[in-house]
Amino acid sequence: MRTELLKLAGLPSAWVAAALGLLIPPLLVTLNARAVPAGTDTGFVELTVGVLGPLVLGTIAAGSEYRGGQLRTSLVCVPSRLRLLAAKTGAVTLTVAVTAALSAVLTLGVAGVLTGGAGPRIAGVVVYWVLGGLLAYGITLLTRSGVLPLTVLIVNTTAVSFSYLLTKVTPLAAYLPDLAGARMYLHDMDTPGDLAPVTGGLVMAAWVAAVLGVAGYVFHRRDA
Amino acid sequence: MRAARRASDQGPRSRTGPRSDVAGPGPALTGGVITIEHVSKRRGRTTILSDVGFAARPGRVTGFLGPNGAGKSSTLRILLGLDRAQRGTALVAGRPFAAWRRPLTVVGALLDEGGAHRARTGRAHLRWIAASNGLARSRVDEVLDLVGLGDAAGRRIGSYSLGMGRRLGLAAALLGDPAVLVLDEPVNGLDAGGIRWMREFLRRRAADGATVLLSSHLMGELAETVDDVVVIDRGRIIADGTLSEVTGAHPSLEDAYFALTEAGTRGPR
Image: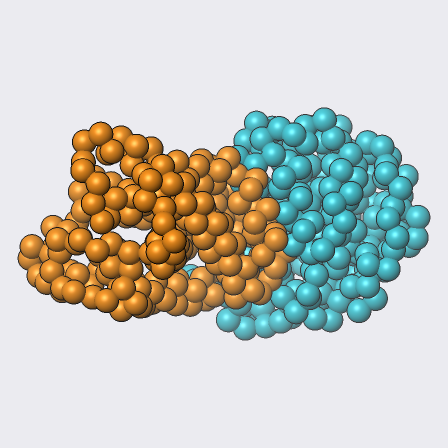
């Protein structure tokens, strides 16, 4: 896993992605403080947007293997594909978790809502970011390109929430990974369904496990 | 197994200046034999390789010759566990490549494309490779100096010339000081001086006991470098022997090659 952390650290874009995750939520919460009255979800709404950072990081972690033929070098160094994937998944998880925890503390601190009781909700944010990063990572691994996760997931997070629009069509959209996962820490969600925080997290985790399972199987089978 | 222990048994090596390794490493290398037997591969309905088999032996440079698309790279990729064959075995020192826990100490590989992300510096690239096999960090600067990239180590790989990219690939292959080298088109993109340096380097490695297997489509260059020749054409081995055996009665390896492959009659591809 040290190798995979070194690989990430050698890429300038990975540092940009980490910086995005670290800085966007505190900046947003500062801007919003002037326009939006503080509520129960102050800070946490902005942290939801901050998942952008892990999405980019997960995409970079997987996508960089398909740039310049790096994957072949990786497999010559570590011939076991499962071992390679395990190490890489671990590196993404660790990096995102640390970024998420720092960003959450920073954001809630800036918003002045960092209280002792915020612990479980911060844990929810950390899990949400890690699962988001792994989702982008899994899709990139499967498609061997960052185009799909970068366009769909990031537009969905920042500009137009397809997931939210889908809730107008079917209440089942509440089980989409982003909406279900946000239940872990958001209290005021104007979407249908009423998943408990743990249930929401499990639903999101199930999505990620499914994508990683398929991606891992395909990665294991296909020629490098 | 002897090959696997080599690198870890040795203490740290003295730092070498640029290209000084042409003078040769101290102890004799004990290469493992490369054996490829009955390897067949299809992709969809296309047959890439059919019943490919040959060996590369310690102390010798084996040239793997063939036109573009003949199956050279596919064979080497199967040998390195990157691609899967439907049939056959490919072993390095008696084991499949993927069975080695720290493969870089056994086999050094130079692949046809760079194998490096362009946004990294040369040094960062070698650093993660060294870390992946538990190799000392000091090896990174040693091999960079060895291939003459010491001054470019801090530059992004994207700014490297083709020849520098090859040198970086060779540096990666040498990190674990392996006794087996597998090189796909090693002189591709090198200038005349670089080609000469590569040839002398590989000859010296083999003289010290290493197994060197390299692919090329450049006959003239190959004839000056190799001891043994394996010729592949359209996925089949059509000649296998020492340089003089394969050249036979033809005036040169190039003439023998065109007679064997009929590439000359087919015109440029």
